[in-house]
Image: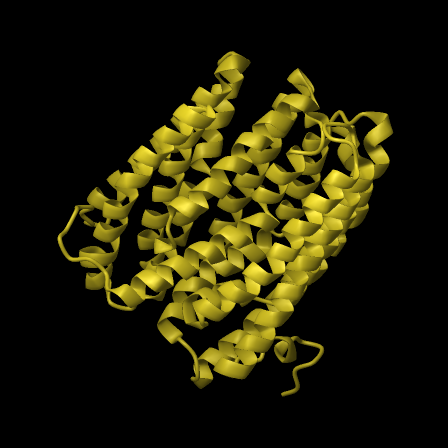
Length: 408
């Protein structure tokens, strides 16, 4: 329990840092500037999902640590090198900011290597490196540096986080990161591909949605949309903590044992209280946000609407339990990939059609509302499918383990 409370405190720090950056940029430089920041972060999170190449999921699924150190990590390094050169070509031909591209590579490597820490039960350190430290550095940079150097501050934050993570692995856990000659087999590469597509489609529900939204709305509306999304993400904090904490336990227990089933029933009670009821509790508090964040009066109604929609989606996500975590560890990556590609392809088409239905680069309130509803609906549909998949193929009953449905 002490570890969970500590992780909750640290993860809460990331939420606080996100809000601190929001307040600093929006109140000092305007919501539009925060929209630019959200655009950069959305690109980094989306592009890094591709650059991970699914190797973080491979580390979660592999039970033999020697295979991870001798094959999976070296293979990740070998296939990542050409992608760095590709990013420089993207910078040269498409004029994308090189600071943001390099930040994406550093963050991708951090997410993969951090799985080594989490496997050993260091989920507290995992949270620090994947969601806290780089935000702290960004806040410090934005506080002291000129706004024109925002991209440089972002780059510094991700590079420093990666360097310190490698040092932690080497000197604290005795893990040497080296390039080996043993490569993973073809089947594992296929799993990595499916995991990449899985992660990329999942990112559409989070950062990529903001990136797509920014193509059709003003940066001011992007800022409003991002604030609403971050509030709902903050309400989902307990679920994030439960998933981070449970992943190593799921890896050890696997499925089919009475201990596993008992553990699932216990966890579903927590998911119901903290994952479902928690976000619902946040809804009345939404009306207090404009007291601390300067939101244009003409946009208050749309802000309230999309925030409530996102919070309801977060509540439904918490109600279905650790579906995504279980799928990545024990489920069929191929089937999950097909399901997510199908669902998020429909979502992508819907977002693009909704965007083109309005006028480009203007404040589009209807687009903001319809986008938030579409994103929440897609996530709920996927969660329900995964509940069915886990029940059918792994005999894991999630919804029936809820406190108001489970008997005995």
